[in-house]
Length: 92
Image 1 (cartoon, rainbow, N blue to C red):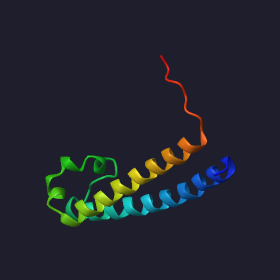
Image 2: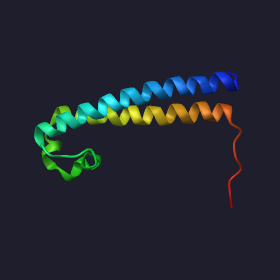
Image 3: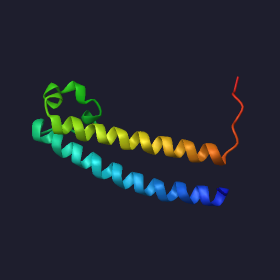
């Protein structure tokens, strides 16, 4: 992989991941509001604060998918950047 193709791949995948994550965040918020009508996106970052959400199996599943998408995005970026960029020596 050339540096140019690697950065192109990062840009294409970044756009795709952002779109998928955005759609999944909207879905998770919609499901959460079925149980907690006034929950905000900020509050949704700590769903364990709302016990009713833990009882909502579909919410739990979709929230897990969202976490997986975010993890995949981070892993993909780290893998491609790791192949393209030389490792930096640790700072002391």
